[in-house]
Length: 132
Image 1: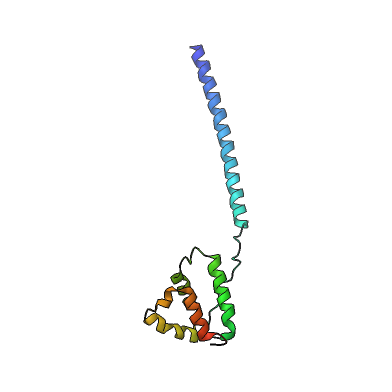
Image 2: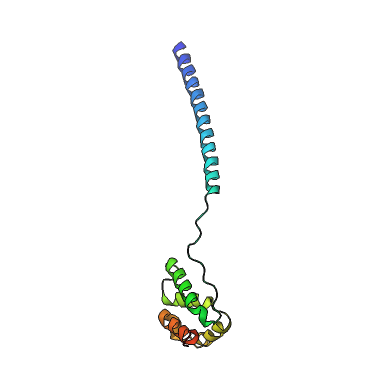
C-alpha cells in the first residue's frame, strides 16, 4: 500500500507541475497573440501604385492620358480584365458627358465593337482624338 501511495503522490506532483507548465505556456500564447495583433494593426497594405482612371468626358486633350491610365490600371489588375469585353465595359464605365452619349448607340444596337478592345479604342480615338 505504501508503494501505491508513493506512486499516487508522484502522479499528483507531476500533474501539478504539468498544470503549472501548461498555465505558463498559455500565458505565453496570450502574450504572443496580443503582440501579433499589435503588429498587424501597425502593418498597412501598400497603396495601389496605379491610380484608378479619372472619367473621360470627351475632351480630346485628355484622351491620351485617359487611355494610358485605363490601360495601366487594367494591366496591373489583369486578372480582372481577362477579355476584351471586360476591358471595353471598364472603359465605358469611366465615360461621362459627351463621351458617354457617344457610346450609347453602340450599346443600344449591341455593336460587335463592344467585344473588341482595340477596335473600341480606335473608335474612341476617331471620335475624340485631336484629329477626330
